[in-house]
Length: 312
Image (cartoon, rainbow, N blue to C red):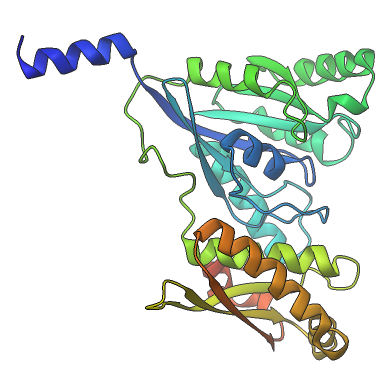
């Protein structure tokens, strides 16, 4: 038997590979980032109890059986008020239209109120196959879940409905089995050990932004943004990272720093610890807070976030 025949035989025995992109869309705070991290098996998207945490599309890459599933965690879809809001919603719908499959995540406790109903209407115009995922099922009665599923399926022709808990993983194996079997046959898009396409500098900025939200969620508004300005690999195997937290007003800078610098120290410590675990090397993290009025109208900041700058 030739080498080529031997390899072909091994591939046939292993089964054909599948691959594809799955856009994860839904209202704000439905649990999309938590679910993607669960399905990927590692942290690739930041999580916060503050709504609209995800600002740009983050891709998380999962291997399940013979399939490589590329999840696209999109910003929550809501009624936009600011320029940044419009860019985030446009990004979310753009991600849906670029995917092989669309997965709508609904918070079972909130049901179809508010933004969820508007998203269902928007999905009617999207041709890709769609599945419905009801999250937080452990907190809702079964008869209410069935009624919610029926109402959503009356509005949009979903291929399948799954009931899951992103927090404890209930129902997630069935969801992954279905996606692995249903995505088209084809080669994998990314190396087997890659879990995200987010550049490490940007992921580091996202980690710090998460810690900022977790520490100051009641005090600091959304007018904050984090950028990694310097990244230096040092001879001793450590990495030096300098990041800037942009806020819009001097009063917000005082909040970010905290009394005697306590807030910024706590944010830096939490971010440095997580980055060291992700990078598997010592991290020296230096955070600076700068006031940049109306950064939400600055095209360069949008490019740094991976968003198109909406005009007008």
